[in-house]
Length: 404
Ligand SMILES: [Zn+2]
Image (cartoon, rainbow, N blue to C red; front, side, top):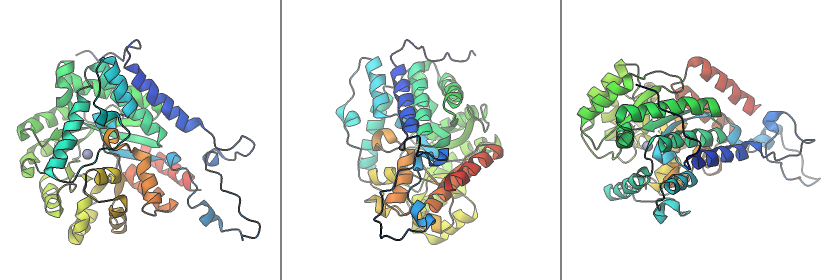
């Protein structure tokens, strides 16, 4: 079948891409020091320290630098981001404007979504997500979502984005599920070239549909399996964690694994350690979407560390979906101290109003991670990505340079 056409530049939808690109460029190009003060490029954008009083003894360099490095310049990988949920509010508004439709206020006000961690709370979240998804119709809109996500990730220091989509949800407006996936993969390739962020795609089945559909989806995903930009790089399972019987998806994950696609199902977000154990046993994940509540069972946590299962931890999301009462309560440090591989992610910035780099800022400012520890988190995210070893090595060297 023919490859989908790129976005028509005459379409208003391009405003979404333009907005994201401009935001990315603003983020990159505003130097905080004048050129005569600028040193090495890695130091150029660090915040200037306030001048210390004359009688204050100089602090050792390690301490002085500890909290001054620009986190947006820390190279990292973004492994937990949903398709429509990745949009900025401005990009969603541009999509609605192109359709001459009005968005509900709860999607455009400055208030992040918040709900208790109950089935009712999840239902409210899903309802709002579905409303937003209604505006992602047609090829140009789908391309705008990928382009927007890549540009905003670039501004956050991401080197690799693994964007999660259930193509079933977008199939109707583009003539089928194959078209939906091909459009996303094609735009992932273009966006990777434009932004320098490698964009891979996670095809995710939904817990709200029959597991047989998931197997069909896994077979489709397998046709595009790879590691590079514009490939399907993993297979997921998302939506209401209480829905369905987890072992029923075993077949779909086996099909994906046999095609070289590692499993990245959600688990241990709304439900606790028992469900994480079930996910682990039946779906054999390489990474857990969230997994954060495995922290409630030390033996399970130890087992996950031993098996090198990565935790895709999304602190903002956890608080907005009521898993924890506040950011201080997110047990990120417990996971890291136990030796877990953790990759911070934003989940759904459209609803939580918090993007990738914000999660690193939270780790620094709320959870007390110093720069060495933040670099460790970033390294973990790179290692847990499904990029090639060669690409990973290059990005890890860039993290070393950030710390120098
Ligand atoms: Zn998620």
